[in-house]
Image: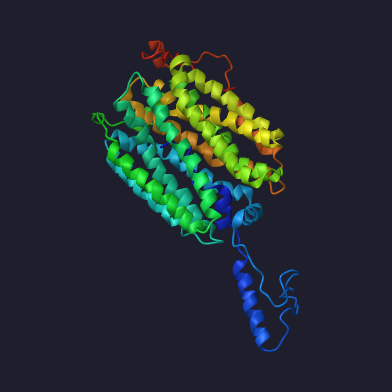
Length: 451
């Protein structure tokens, strides 16, 4: 499980359910016209409130509505505010990460099973509730997808990442990146699954229920296989005192400040690469699978990051991934062809995958007392979540309904760039230890700089 948090139903599909629907009005119009036909009036007589049936529909024949399809949902998506739709995914992402402030504390107190099982139940329930969302009911999607699924995933995220530290020391970074790669694998399978079922005979509700059933089964397996090995810390961590102590750790402070800036820009390609492709006139089928290409590359990035971090160090790989991701997002300003979408998707997906996979290992590397690991992750991820909360609504507002793509791309790209190295050798108390012993893992612990 990883916070790349996948929004299993894409923003395009959510917008279609949240957006306004005219189908009921169309059916009501036909009923009125039929009544008039029975009274001997002409079916196609136009009135100010009842427009004529258009040409090509057949005199006296009701209009046929496709009830969805790619063009239908894409049209509704275009009618919905980009900023409003972005809040669905951004609040979800915020809760997945920011809930760590509470979840990390509960994890340190030994509530691993309560968090894992409770989070799995809430997440599964929320996805099934999403399948019941009605047209023109934005709040139903917000409650299920944003709040319910966000809190449920947040309850699982930190315990599933932190518990592997009970079993690994030398290979800890590698194992954590393998755990983080799971969400990328899911983000490859679910778009393919939903893109085919939503436009097929199943429809929205049954498609989401099928996805929720698959996820629920996987959550059952994870709850049965994850086991903590070490007892909880003997002393409970006071978060206020811990935050005061951590504030003297320069490397941890700078890393914590840099993470929300990254997440402000991180989600832009994930949320908008499909719509960007469509509005530039690219093939509609390919546009849907552009996100799959990005997520496939992200999977490779997450898996490879563990091996690369062993050689180059976690901090150095984080810096490289931030710079590469920033350049890729800025490159979206010039997106105009199929080749550009593929290249940018592969490049950005890899760098983004590296960064996301190394977030937890970075906090681990910066932690010298592992009884504080839950507290450090909780504080760092809570602050990181703020970037995910506000970043994409800002990008959506900059995009506007006129689809001015260079504005959000420039904003999000610079959010990543301001994390780059200024060659100022900040170090933490932990960095005086030297390096982390392990299979080639040599981290100077002077890693994160902001301009």
